[in-house]
Image (cartoon, rainbow, N blue to C red; front, top):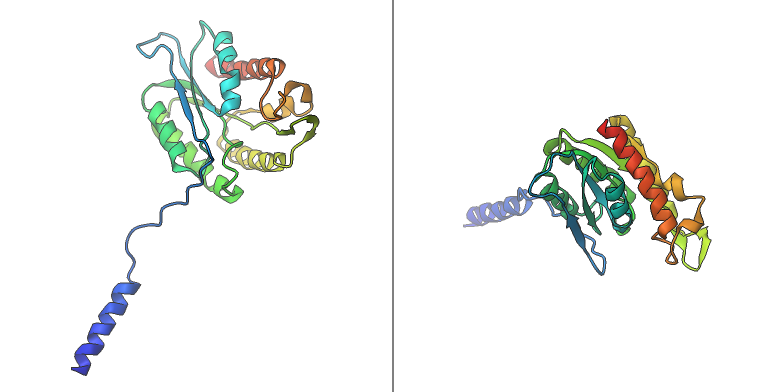
Length: 226
């Protein structure tokens, strides 16, 4: 009887110690409001090369002017979202779009949202995003856009503390894309010495800033369409 009891207890210990075979799901950090905006013109067909802009509300701000500047040269779509690297839903949203159409150029940015994720997580997930492009948009030419600085609302001459995290994420992304030979659209450098480009909230841009960004984005895309 004692031998049976010992065997029974040993079996319980083995079962308790055995791996379940299921990885722990990643911790997902949500903002108070999450959103996604997908806009694909000429969905029923076009002879123009397709271009996709991926980003957040900054990208959404300059998108209309980029589409105008590239009119007759490209059909410009957008995927703008509050999701950040570290959130698996970001990859799902991007995969949903890039699997539907053959894009000639993808201009992408991510870095102003998801400050609940560490820079270590950002570094770990950035190559995963590039692998997604290689798998589902292997013929697309990629352009990475640096995230823009954040200024203090009401005192636009002063950079907000969170800009240091933006700088670090830009450094991480720049290091990775440089090794992959991906062109860099330095939107951070474009606006960092121009507080007059920012709107009152210190995050978004006024018309002057949007024009400057759209013109640079369009030039970068046209270079890849040659």
